[in-house]
Length: 307
Image 1 (cartoon, one colour):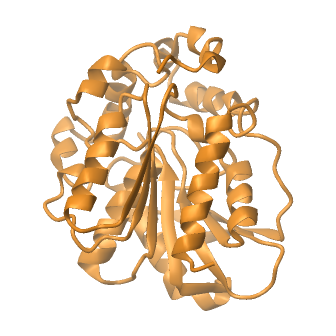
Image 2 (cartoon, one colour):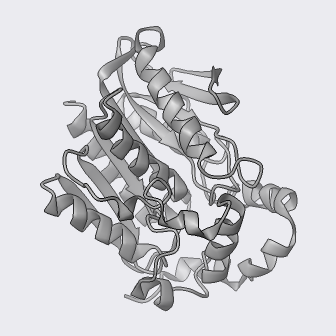
Protein backbone atom coordinates (compact mmCIF):
# COMPACT_ATOMS: atom_id res chain seq x y z
CA UNK A 1 0.00 0.00 0.00
CA UNK A 2 1.34 3.52 -0.72
CA UNK A 3 2.67 5.54 2.18
CA UNK A 4 -0.05 7.52 3.92
CA UNK A 5 0.17 11.08 2.51
CA UNK A 6 -0.22 12.52 6.00
CA UNK A 7 3.44 11.64 6.58
CA UNK A 8 4.68 13.67 3.60
CA UNK A 9 5.68 16.82 5.51
CA UNK A 10 7.03 14.90 8.50
CA UNK A 11 9.31 12.78 6.34
CA UNK A 12 10.90 15.81 4.69
CA UNK A 13 12.89 16.04 7.93
CA UNK A 14 16.39 14.57 7.85
CA UNK A 15 16.06 12.58 11.06
CA UNK A 16 19.56 11.12 10.80
CA UNK A 17 21.04 14.61 11.14
CA UNK A 18 19.60 14.93 14.64
CA UNK A 19 21.92 12.29 16.09
CA UNK A 20 24.77 14.81 15.85
CA UNK A 21 22.96 17.16 18.25
CA UNK A 22 23.94 15.23 21.33
CA UNK A 23 21.68 13.39 23.73
CA UNK A 24 20.33 16.34 25.74
CA UNK A 25 19.34 18.47 22.74
CA UNK A 26 17.87 15.46 21.01
CA UNK A 27 15.77 14.65 24.07
CA UNK A 28 14.46 18.21 24.12
CA UNK A 29 13.60 18.08 20.43
CA UNK A 30 11.96 14.67 20.73
CA UNK A 31 9.71 15.72 23.59
CA UNK A 32 8.54 18.89 21.82
CA UNK A 33 8.10 17.10 18.49
CA UNK A 34 5.09 15.19 19.83
CA UNK A 35 3.10 18.30 20.74
CA UNK A 36 1.33 18.42 17.36
CA UNK A 37 0.55 14.69 17.33
CA UNK A 38 -0.29 13.31 20.75
CA UNK A 39 -3.51 15.23 21.37
CA UNK A 40 -5.04 17.15 24.25
CA UNK A 41 -5.02 15.33 27.62
CA UNK A 42 -8.44 14.02 28.62
CA UNK A 43 -9.76 14.41 32.11
CA UNK A 44 -9.56 11.20 34.11
CA UNK A 45 -10.69 10.41 37.63
CA UNK A 46 -7.34 11.28 39.19
CA UNK A 47 -3.62 11.27 38.46
CA UNK A 48 -1.07 10.40 41.15
CA UNK A 49 2.68 10.85 40.76
CA UNK A 50 4.75 8.54 42.92
CA UNK A 51 8.29 7.27 43.32
CA UNK A 52 9.23 3.59 43.56
CA UNK A 53 12.57 2.71 45.16
CA UNK A 54 14.38 0.19 42.96
CA UNK A 55 17.94 -1.10 43.05
CA UNK A 56 18.69 1.11 40.05
CA UNK A 57 17.34 4.44 41.35
CA UNK A 58 14.23 6.13 42.69
CA UNK A 59 11.86 5.59 39.77
CA UNK A 60 9.05 8.07 39.05
CA UNK A 61 5.72 6.56 38.04
CA UNK A 62 2.39 8.14 37.15
CA UNK A 63 -0.84 6.37 38.05
CA UNK A 64 -4.01 7.23 36.16
CA UNK A 65 -7.37 6.27 37.65
CA UNK A 66 -10.74 6.23 35.89
CA UNK A 67 -13.72 8.27 37.04
CA UNK A 68 -15.43 5.23 38.55
CA UNK A 69 -14.67 3.90 42.02
CA UNK A 70 -13.57 0.46 43.10
CA UNK A 71 -10.70 -1.96 42.58
CA UNK A 72 -9.36 -1.64 39.05
CA UNK A 73 -7.62 -3.83 36.52
CA UNK A 74 -4.37 -2.20 35.49
CA UNK A 75 -2.07 -1.71 32.53
CA UNK A 76 1.59 -1.10 33.29
CA UNK A 77 2.73 1.13 30.42
CA UNK A 78 6.33 1.60 29.27
CA UNK A 79 7.11 4.47 26.93
CA UNK A 80 9.16 4.43 23.74
CA UNK A 81 12.16 6.46 22.64
CA UNK A 82 14.91 4.00 21.82
CA UNK A 83 15.96 3.67 25.48
CA UNK A 84 17.48 7.17 25.07
CA UNK A 85 14.54 9.54 24.54
CA UNK A 86 11.03 10.01 25.86
CA UNK A 87 9.30 10.29 29.20
CA UNK A 88 5.88 9.80 30.77
CA UNK A 89 4.77 13.28 29.64
CA UNK A 90 5.14 12.34 25.96
CA UNK A 91 2.62 9.51 26.44
CA UNK A 92 0.41 11.26 29.00
CA UNK A 93 -2.59 11.86 26.67
CA UNK A 94 -2.39 8.27 25.42
CA UNK A 95 -2.40 6.82 28.95
CA UNK A 96 -5.41 8.98 29.79
CA UNK A 97 -7.28 7.66 26.76
CA UNK A 98 -6.58 4.05 27.78
CA UNK A 99 -7.70 4.77 31.33
CA UNK A 100 -11.03 6.17 30.15
CA UNK A 101 -11.66 3.66 27.37
CA UNK A 102 -10.83 0.53 29.36
CA UNK A 103 -11.95 1.81 32.76
CA UNK A 104 -8.68 0.65 34.25
CA UNK A 105 -5.74 2.10 36.10
CA UNK A 106 -2.70 2.85 33.94
CA UNK A 107 0.70 2.92 35.61
CA UNK A 108 3.31 4.66 33.46
CA UNK A 109 7.01 4.11 34.28
CA UNK A 110 9.58 6.90 33.82
CA UNK A 111 12.59 4.58 33.66
CA UNK A 112 16.19 5.78 33.47
CA UNK A 113 17.49 6.51 29.98
CA UNK A 114 20.69 5.55 28.21
CA UNK A 115 23.55 6.27 27.95
CA UNK A 116 23.36 7.14 31.66
CA UNK A 117 21.49 3.88 32.29
CA UNK A 118 22.70 1.21 29.91
CA UNK A 119 21.47 -2.37 29.48
CA UNK A 120 20.26 -4.12 31.56
CA UNK A 121 19.36 -1.26 33.93
CA UNK A 122 16.10 -0.14 32.20
CA UNK A 123 14.90 -3.75 32.17
CA UNK A 124 15.79 -4.34 35.81
CA UNK A 125 14.15 -1.07 36.80
CA UNK A 126 10.90 -1.75 34.94
CA UNK A 127 10.79 -5.34 36.21
CA UNK A 128 11.18 -4.17 39.80
CA UNK A 129 8.46 -1.53 39.36
CA UNK A 130 6.16 -4.19 37.91
CA UNK A 131 6.84 -6.46 40.88
CA UNK A 132 6.20 -3.51 43.22
CA UNK A 133 2.80 -2.92 41.60
CA UNK A 134 1.79 -6.51 42.36
CA UNK A 135 3.10 -6.30 45.92
CA UNK A 136 1.28 -3.00 46.54
CA UNK A 137 -1.89 -3.74 44.59
CA UNK A 138 -4.15 -3.19 47.58
CA UNK A 139 -2.71 0.26 48.27
CA UNK A 140 -2.96 1.12 44.57
CA UNK A 141 -6.61 -0.04 44.41
CA UNK A 142 -5.60 -2.54 41.73
CA UNK A 143 -6.66 -6.15 41.31
CA UNK A 144 -3.44 -8.24 41.19
CA UNK A 145 -5.26 -10.90 39.15
CA UNK A 146 -5.89 -8.49 36.26
CA UNK A 147 -2.64 -6.68 35.52
CA UNK A 148 -1.34 -6.35 31.96
CA UNK A 149 1.83 -4.81 30.57
CA UNK A 150 2.48 -2.99 27.33
CA UNK A 151 4.41 -0.33 25.54
CA UNK A 152 5.37 1.43 22.35
CA UNK A 153 8.66 0.80 20.51
CA UNK A 154 11.27 -0.12 23.16
CA UNK A 155 8.43 -0.04 25.67
CA UNK A 156 7.10 -3.04 23.79
CA UNK A 157 10.54 -4.62 23.91
CA UNK A 158 10.69 -4.28 27.68
CA UNK A 159 7.11 -5.54 28.00
CA UNK A 160 7.97 -8.68 26.03
CA UNK A 161 11.05 -9.40 28.15
CA UNK A 162 9.20 -8.77 31.43
CA UNK A 163 6.46 -11.13 30.25
CA UNK A 164 9.10 -13.82 29.71
CA UNK A 165 10.73 -13.10 33.08
CA UNK A 166 7.37 -13.23 34.85
CA UNK A 167 6.94 -16.77 33.56
CA UNK A 168 10.51 -17.82 34.38
CA UNK A 169 10.80 -16.24 37.84
CA UNK A 170 7.22 -16.89 38.95
CA UNK A 171 7.12 -13.74 41.10
CA UNK A 172 3.95 -12.38 39.49
CA UNK A 173 1.53 -13.30 36.71
CA UNK A 174 0.58 -10.93 33.90
CA UNK A 175 -2.71 -11.49 32.10
CA UNK A 176 -1.85 -9.72 28.83
CA UNK A 177 0.94 -8.03 26.88
CA UNK A 178 0.69 -5.22 24.31
CA UNK A 179 3.65 -4.92 21.94
CA UNK A 180 3.58 -1.97 19.52
CA UNK A 181 6.24 -1.37 16.83
CA UNK A 182 8.81 -3.03 19.09
CA UNK A 183 12.43 -3.84 18.38
CA UNK A 184 12.65 -7.50 19.34
CA UNK A 185 16.05 -8.43 17.88
CA UNK A 186 18.33 -5.45 18.45
CA UNK A 187 20.87 -6.40 15.78
CA UNK A 188 18.43 -8.28 13.57
CA UNK A 189 18.62 -8.57 9.80
CA UNK A 190 15.22 -8.83 8.13
CA UNK A 191 13.76 -7.73 4.78
CA UNK A 192 11.89 -4.86 6.45
CA UNK A 193 15.15 -3.55 7.92
CA UNK A 194 16.43 -3.26 4.34
CA UNK A 195 13.21 -2.11 2.65
CA UNK A 196 12.44 0.55 5.25
CA UNK A 197 15.96 1.42 6.39
CA UNK A 198 15.89 4.97 5.05
CA UNK A 199 13.27 7.66 4.68
CA UNK A 200 10.63 6.53 7.19
CA UNK A 201 11.65 8.34 10.41
CA UNK A 202 13.34 5.41 12.17
CA UNK A 203 16.33 4.47 10.02
CA UNK A 204 19.13 1.91 9.95
CA UNK A 205 21.51 4.62 11.13
CA UNK A 206 19.12 5.52 13.93
CA UNK A 207 18.79 1.93 15.13
CA UNK A 208 22.59 1.61 15.26
CA UNK A 209 22.87 4.89 17.18
CA UNK A 210 20.25 3.83 19.73
CA UNK A 211 21.97 0.47 20.18
CA UNK A 212 25.28 2.23 20.76
CA UNK A 213 23.75 4.36 23.51
CA UNK A 214 21.82 1.50 25.13
CA UNK A 215 24.26 -1.41 24.99
CA UNK A 216 27.63 -1.68 26.68
CA UNK A 217 28.79 -3.71 23.67
CA UNK A 218 26.96 -4.79 20.52
CA UNK A 219 27.46 -8.43 21.56
CA UNK A 220 24.75 -7.84 24.19
CA UNK A 221 22.24 -7.65 21.34
CA UNK A 222 22.37 -11.46 21.29
CA UNK A 223 21.18 -11.66 24.88
CA UNK A 224 17.46 -12.61 24.99
CA UNK A 225 17.05 -10.10 27.83
CA UNK A 226 17.84 -7.43 25.23
CA UNK A 227 16.35 -9.20 22.19
CA UNK A 228 13.34 -11.26 23.31
CA UNK A 229 12.87 -12.75 19.84
CA UNK A 230 16.04 -14.76 20.55
CA UNK A 231 14.55 -16.52 23.58
CA UNK A 232 14.48 -20.32 23.56
CA UNK A 233 11.02 -20.74 25.03
CA UNK A 234 7.81 -19.01 23.88
CA UNK A 235 5.37 -21.27 25.71
CA UNK A 236 3.14 -20.26 28.61
CA UNK A 237 3.40 -16.51 27.96
CA UNK A 238 0.53 -14.05 28.40
CA UNK A 239 -1.82 -13.56 25.44
CA UNK A 240 -0.59 -10.73 23.24
CA UNK A 241 -1.69 -7.91 21.01
CA UNK A 242 1.14 -7.18 18.57
CA UNK A 243 0.94 -4.15 16.27
CA UNK A 244 3.27 -3.58 13.33
CA UNK A 245 3.52 -0.99 10.55
CA UNK A 246 4.18 -1.58 6.86
CA UNK A 247 6.93 1.05 6.56
CA UNK A 248 8.65 0.28 9.86
CA UNK A 249 12.10 -1.34 9.70
CA UNK A 250 11.00 -3.33 12.77
CA UNK A 251 7.89 -4.75 11.06
CA UNK A 252 9.19 -8.24 10.37
CA UNK A 253 10.53 -8.97 13.84
CA UNK A 254 7.19 -8.01 15.38
CA UNK A 255 5.44 -10.42 13.05
CA UNK A 256 8.05 -13.12 13.67
CA UNK A 257 7.46 -12.69 17.39
CA UNK A 258 3.74 -13.20 16.86
CA UNK A 259 4.49 -16.37 14.88
CA UNK A 260 6.71 -17.72 17.68
CA UNK A 261 4.07 -17.07 20.32
CA UNK A 262 1.35 -18.65 18.21
CA UNK A 263 3.47 -21.69 17.35
CA UNK A 264 4.04 -22.24 21.07
CA UNK A 265 0.31 -22.31 21.70
CA UNK A 266 -0.14 -18.68 22.69
CA UNK A 267 -3.16 -16.56 21.89
CA UNK A 268 -2.07 -13.69 19.64
CA UNK A 269 -3.80 -10.78 17.97
CA UNK A 270 -1.49 -9.50 15.22
CA UNK A 271 -2.40 -6.38 13.28
CA UNK A 272 -0.29 -4.70 10.60
CA UNK A 273 -1.19 -1.12 9.66
CA UNK A 274 -0.43 -0.59 5.99
CA UNK A 275 0.89 2.73 4.70
CA UNK A 276 2.11 3.56 8.22
CA UNK A 277 5.52 4.27 9.79
CA UNK A 278 7.21 3.54 13.12
CA UNK A 279 5.93 5.56 16.06
CA UNK A 280 2.44 6.14 14.68
CA UNK A 281 0.61 4.90 17.78
CA UNK A 282 1.13 8.17 19.66
CA UNK A 283 -0.14 10.28 16.75
CA UNK A 284 -3.65 10.20 18.15
CA UNK A 285 -4.69 13.72 17.14
CA UNK A 286 -3.64 13.46 13.49
CA UNK A 287 -3.90 9.86 12.36
CA UNK A 288 -7.01 7.73 12.02
CA UNK A 289 -4.91 4.56 12.04
CA UNK A 290 -3.49 5.54 15.42
CA UNK A 291 -6.98 5.91 16.82
CA UNK A 292 -7.99 2.58 15.29
CA UNK A 293 -4.95 0.90 16.83
CA UNK A 294 -5.80 2.39 20.21
CA UNK A 295 -9.37 1.11 19.89
CA UNK A 296 -8.02 -2.37 19.14
CA UNK A 297 -5.69 -2.30 22.14
CA UNK A 298 -8.49 -1.13 24.41
CA UNK A 299 -10.80 -3.88 23.13
CA UNK A 300 -8.18 -6.57 23.77
CA UNK A 301 -7.47 -5.21 27.25
CA UNK A 302 -11.16 -5.21 28.14
CA UNK A 303 -11.34 -8.83 26.98
CA UNK A 304 -8.30 -9.71 29.09
CA UNK A 305 -9.84 -7.97 32.08
CA UNK A 306 -13.23 -9.69 31.49
CA UNK A 307 -14.97 -6.38 31.09
